[in-house]
Image (tube, rainbow, N blue to C red; front, side):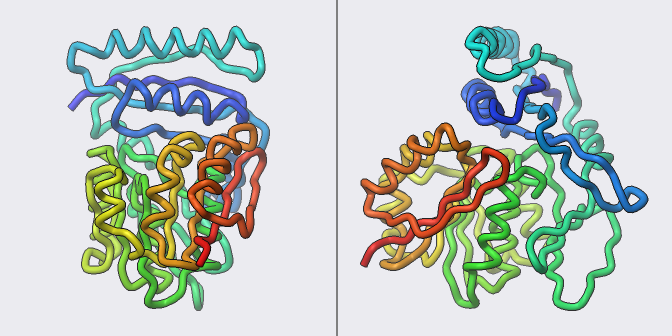
Length: 306
């Protein structure tokens, strides 16, 4: 299958807005590629904070791609005219899905997160140290490699809050990285949901790659009213690494599926857009009990009252 790649280089503070724009006109995932510097003979890396970030999205070559390109260019022009943060020119190219997947391999390295987690790309070798939890990942065309600050914060919070026997819901699972991590940390069951078919396929493959298909159930769908009513009060912990206004729009559903006293880890939130998520979550009956921050990105930890 062939795709139109739409790529924009932006200031870190503009990543969420540009990601939201691209996701509005594409349906198969947004990729956020932070600038890195390889160290330790290429086996490790460090993120170059404050440097421009590449945001990429993919639209199928189906006759509608030119309209998609034009609409995104118009949106980027409006962002640039505001002059708040650097937004570069839209760059496009046609890519074969297989070529895209192989191109990822050059830039994806073994990643250490938190105290124990190691993310190992499926094509790289790694010998774990005692007590390390190794998560094998092939991101495909879905967001979620562990490199972006929001994913990293969610992984760190899962390490802190997941306990054996928990039932976990992952909303917007992407590559499945957070669901797999929760299961490796001892969750009894994980329900992973995403409205992108590419993400669902990628997550399903990654779950199988880690031998967790019996404990992690990947579903293509939305956390709408009907789904939230069906799952009401079933989950000890919910993680939603999306974007602020989407989290706000499903705040009642996120609260409904939690058990009393259950936790929500909400991320994908840039500081300037915090009210878009925070207000609705408070109105839904959740209490803010913690937060972490990397650069301008936030992860908010909420508890359901009662």
